[in-house]
Amino acid sequence: MTAVRERAPAGRGAPSRRVPSGFTVTVATVAAFVLLFYTVPNVEPVWRAARGDGAPGAFTAARVSCVSHPGHEACSWYGTFTPADGGAARETTMYGAGRGDLAAGERVPAIDVGRASRVYAPAGSHEWIPTGLVLLAGAALLYPLARRVSGRARRRDGAPARSGTPAG
Image 1 (spheres, helix red, strand yellow):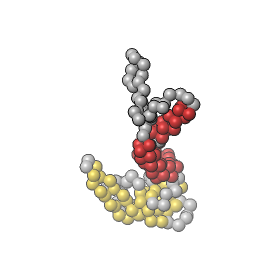
Image 2 (spheres, helix red, strand yellow):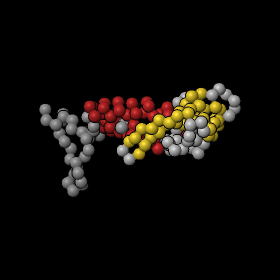
Image 3 (cartoon, helix red, strand yellow):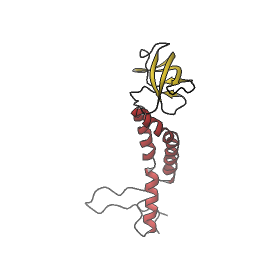
Image 4 (cartoon, rainbow, N blue to C red):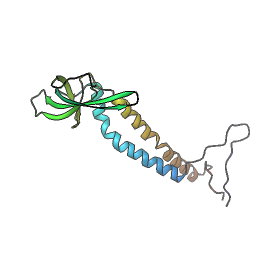
């Protein structure tokens, strides 16, 4: 069997694009679902944190832990969050506070957006930016699947195939 490759009519530009292979579709779809599996549940708390929308309270800093990366340092302050409504205090971290932003024993306003592991400053957070980029990457990785499905639909409808399928 010889594969037939369609070409655009003379003078009309480059050859038509092929439908992605089954391997490409499978790898991209699995990667998309992994990214979306971890990102989608975080959309609501990240959005709330960006707007500073959560249960108010106070964070009491206990200790800081920092990791140096090329060009910057990322720190986490560990301590206790006490809700303003008098609920039970819990051990957590303050997101976005750097080494010099707090001191051990310092008590600062904070908001709880529903994450067990962290609280945020009332001014909000920029955590939505990387979360949004990962969400977009996951959605973009579904594009090969959509091309493959639409290519099959065109072949069933009698339209010419847009891939290197065998003639016949």
